[in-house]
Every structure is written in C-alpha cells, then in structure tokens.
Image (cartoon, rainbow, N blue to C red):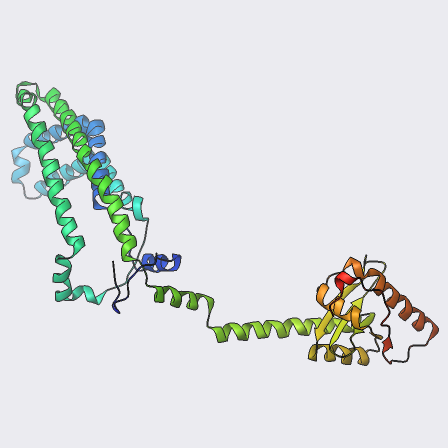
Length: 373
C-alpha cells in the first residue's frame, strides 16, 4: 500500500479537490497503447480509402521527376524551382492522409484523460538519483513488460501475415504497374487493420491498469483528508467570527423592526416577543422580533423609547418564543391568546388609558401543548 513521506499509508480515495489540483499540474491519466491503437486504425482506414489514389499519385510524381529536361537540371536557377514545384505537389498529394493522422494523433490522447495544459516545472525530475530510481520502479517494469508483450504479439502477427501472404506479395511483381499499386495499397491497409487486433487486447489491458495506477498514486492519508476539509471549511476561529458577524447583522435588522410592532409580550424580564398586526394585509399577527435575556432587554428598551405597549404574560411569552419564528405568523394555537391581548391594548389606546407601564395579563388562554414551563 502506498505511503507518503511521513510513512503514513495512503488509504483514502482522492477527493475532487485533489483530482482538480492534479489536473492543474498536468497529472492526468494517459494510455500510450490506446493512442497507438487509434493511430493504427486511422492508418488502416486512410490506406484503404486513400491508398490507391495516393500510390498512383506518387507514381505520377516519380514519372514526372524522371522526365525532367536535363537542361533544366543543369541550370542552377531552374533546379530549385523544379524541386519546389515537386515538393508542393507531393505535399498536396499527401495532405489528406497526413491531416487524418495529425487529427487522430491530437485527439487520441484526449479520449481517456481529457485536455490539460500545464507549465509546472518539476525540478526533482532533473535529479539523476531520482531518475535512476524511476527506471527500476514498478511502473517502469510494467512498461517494459508491456513493450515486450507488444513486440512479441505484433511481431508474431506480422510474421504470420507475411507467411500467409507470401504468394500474393510475390505476385505483385507480375501485375501491371497501376493495378499492382492499387493491390499493394489494399493489402497494406488490411495488414494495418489486422495488426490492430492484438493492439485491441493490449489497450484493453493497459487502459484499466493506467486508471488504477493513476487513482492509486492520487490516494491520500487520513491526515491529508482532514487538512483539506479544514482548508475548505475554514479555520474554526474564522467560522466563529463569520457566524458572530452574521448574528449581529441579523440582530440589527431585527431591532430595526421593533418600532413597527403593535405590542411587546414579555415574561417579564427574560423573554420578549414583538408582534405586529395589520388587519388589511395580514391574516394573523407576525413576530417581528424576539429575544432572550440581553436581547429581550434591548427589545424592551426600544419599546419604551417608541411608546409601544408592553404586556407581561409569562406563559404566552415563553410559548411565542419557543413555538414561533421570526418574520412568521404566530402559531394557530395562540391566536385566541394574542387576540385577547391586542383587543385589550386597542381598547386602552382608544380610551387614552395607556400609561407606558407594563400591562399584566397572566390569565390569557395558552394551550397545554404549547406551554413551556
């Protein structure tokens, strides 16, 4: 099992962040055998589709070259022009096949690990001792083993093809030139195609091996996973500071709504709940502020500053605090108790009997299931 520099075993699968960092450094899974297989298939397809025309064009190029006027060749000014024309014609002739091979060479490596671009220079790769150690590593031995197997398998298939097609190859010399060229292109294309069959087996073994090896090298120790989680989640003191700021901001916003309340229900010192009710736009009274101890004291102070009636009701204040939610309507079970308080406060305000002193109403009906003694 893999270990890190501290001797800890890498038993944990790589996290998404670890894989992303590896990709940014250019560490992605690749399979040379898959790329080789794709190149062989492309070469076979190109020779079968373009081979006859390609060989006929090459033959025409050779005839044109042999038919050059000796006087032009002898002229130093004409020879570069003739060679340049011949090179351009050859390039145009080979362009479709070379373009196909170029596209496959670029796209084949992307089939497994995708595209990545990295400029990270690893100085440790210039270390001679580490380079020698990598020569005798497990991956290097596996690459050597694969190379030997590939050589034996592909070489054996090639020898078998030559043995089976000996008569056909010898017969090419007795055919007319143009049919022989087309026949040769066809034979070469099918030879490349047959050679891909053992490469299918080799690539089928190499791709899973590369994936497993890549994931094994990315494994992490339990400590590395904990450190990454700590970095992603943030340090505890930073998180606590953020939570504190969020609470202070939310509390500030809540306190700004206290002056809009119609009544403050208290118990009488430890709990305070500010209620607002607008019959035209609300189906039920809404809790605009609530708090315990110091927050409750601040709510009572704001209520006094803005002359908001305060009602002391021990059971109702606790029931509202523990069963209600900020900026939400009061629980259905407390409708009757709050309605009694609001009706009494509205009557006192109408009659001009509000004095600013707390109103004691401990007899309002609070359902047993909502009481918190």
